[in-house]
Image: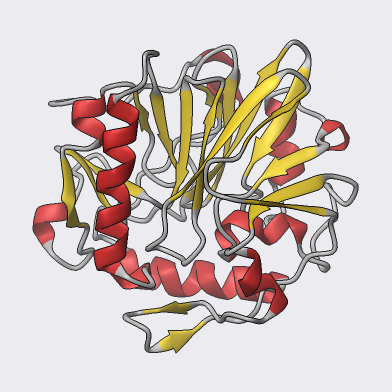
Length: 289
C-alpha cells in the first residue's frame, strides 16, 4: 500500500473511531531492557534486543517520523537486519513498501506462508465483514516464509511461530525467548481485559475467537512468565487479564467495549515525546488499572 494509502487510512480511521475509546497504543519507549516500541498514530512497532542484536517486530505505517522516534531509543534503522511480520496490513508493513523511505531495504522479512499469499495477489484483504477490499501491499525485501510451529534463532534469539488466523488468513504471532509474545492484531485490551480483536477488521471473527482460545490454552502450558504485547492496546504479563474475554469480540461501535483511558483520537500524538521515551518505562495493563 502506497504512502497516500497510509495517509488515507489515518484520515478515515481517525474519523471513524474518534471518540470511541478503542485504540490505546503504547507511547514510544521501553517495556524493559529487551523490548522497546515506537508509536505510530494508533499502532506500535516493537524492537527486541539481546546481546547487542536487535530484531524488529512489524514495520508500522509508511510513517514519516519513524527514523526520528527510533533515534529516541538509540536504535539505528541501518542496524535492523531481521523483521518479523505478524500480518500484512499497512499499519504493520508500510515501512517496507517501495515508496517508503526504504529504511530497511536490506533487512530480511519473516512472514507466514499463508499471509504471503496477500503479497503475491493470490488473496485479497477484506474488511467490514468482507464488503471492502483493501489495496494490495507490495515489498521487495528478501523473504523467509514461515509455518505454524516453526522454531528458529536469529543472533541467539529464539523465535517460535504460532498461526492464529481470523484477523487475516495467515496471521502469525511470535513467542520470543519463551517469554515475550508479540500478538499483532489477535488481542484487543479493554479496561477489563483482553478480547478478540476488532470485529470490523477481521476476515473471519469466529475463526479469530477459535484461534485466541487455542493460543490461550498453549500459553497456559508454558513454564515461563509471558509478556503479552499487542499491536494497538499495550501489554500485560497477567494471562488472566490478557485472555479474560477471549470468546468475545471487540465491537468498536458499542460503548461497553470503550476503554476510558484511551485517547479521544488516537491519531493525535502530542503525548508521545522523546523525554518520556528516554525516562519512563511503559506501564503494563492489569485488572482495575
